[in-house]
Image (cartoon, rainbow, N blue to C red):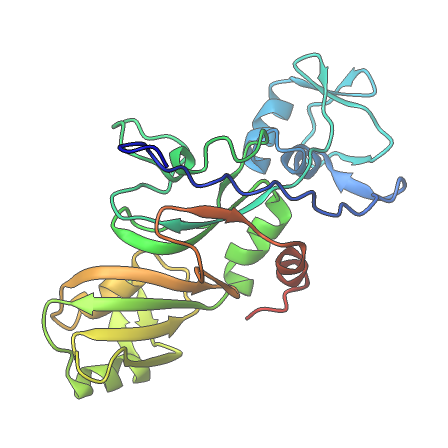
Length: 263
């Protein structure tokens, strides 16, 4: 390498995921079709429909809940809406980075880190606090995103927690048994010290999707979380993925997620 030169890591090779052929007779809600096409969220699609911005087979449709088949022609803004290729990206989120599509305060976002990964509009599945690091999935597959974040199907997450002082064994047991927070009781599915020597580090396994839940659990017992790293989400880990880097999911990982094979 030339002296003083910059080393560049090659960009991961784009994966073409298998797309099942849609059944031409299957009826699907118009807002879901538009979300699956990567045009917008289902809620935004409903707004477009109410505003009379959507045509089906040349006719304006304003009724929410309208169902169409895959052989129907949907138009938005005079352009035909087609189902786009799916993209699935795993990011090892760094600190000081916000989990939003854009930030009015001009802070670094996760979207900045995966810029250029695909032409389709992808978005984060769930969120991590600005100072929480680790596994984050981004995709344009609205159905899969719903499955992974819906309260009924909440998936397993494992966090590595660092606190400002040693965590007592009594408090570890309390977290395992369950504690009461302002929005209801919560317990860890599993908790243990992360190392033999440092009692200020713990590994916690949890299914809850509640906001800032891990930090709040420890704060309620008088600990300040100095560092929080998500090491596992729905079967995905950050193995071989340096902080701040991303990769495409493999077809096998996508299949597992879709089948709900991971906890």
